[in-house]
Length: 350
Image (cartoon, rainbow, N blue to C red; front, side, top):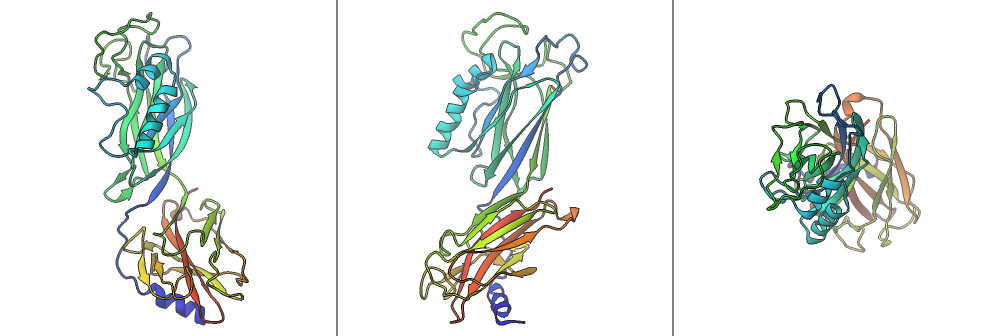
């Protein structure tokens, strides 16, 4: 075993507890299958049947952009009555600015039957998703989900299927698809439609939330930002590239480089265990060991003062899909100076 491999193994052996799963992110797709048709809803399928743009966001548990039994917000009212998403978009963005929401979710309008796709990121801070679309034409009817939780039991959900039924926003009293505007005064709570043209047992559509291939660089700042960059999503037969750098010049030229791959993060994830003397923050700086154990090590090109890139091609093994790996880089120069980089969480997908 060469000295660099021995050093990596010694450092990696310092952590011995399982990962806690705190602070991670995940990337999801949502597939909207619009099922509304003359066959599913005979006599309740108007000419030009379609759904408006998908609109929603990720947010904290306990907050809502809409909820059964509550009054619709102005943004939900405008979405449900006219299919316009700009007001609800403003509400989501205001929640993002206030710290109760994470990201906006958007998707295209589609005819029904039909299919639409969107993708988005969630985090443990904002682990739930709300998505809606207008049933069109209609007085104020819509489909959607309110706060679907994608992080359950300290684990990201791989796939979640939700059958969609029609909701009444409680803002227009029209009783049929082509009814003229009849503002409901006073406004009524949002309710599930159980009677009338869309009150049958057949779903209007289906949302399928599926976790995607993703990368997420993590660490808590002890290892300088920018020491590890990642390009290329980890998919079967695709190459993900790890670029190691020493932005503060702690390592001299002709340094050995490597990335170590593990199936576990450090117990303090997304932080790590402090290791004195292995830092890239300058002479004598410490570092964070961000992974636990090692299942594979890939040696990279010699570092000569400029960033180096180490490729990893994901093999064509379907059993890897859905697996999560943790990768951290290291550099060691001829003077014995060694530094650990930030780390990256890899989620393998197709």
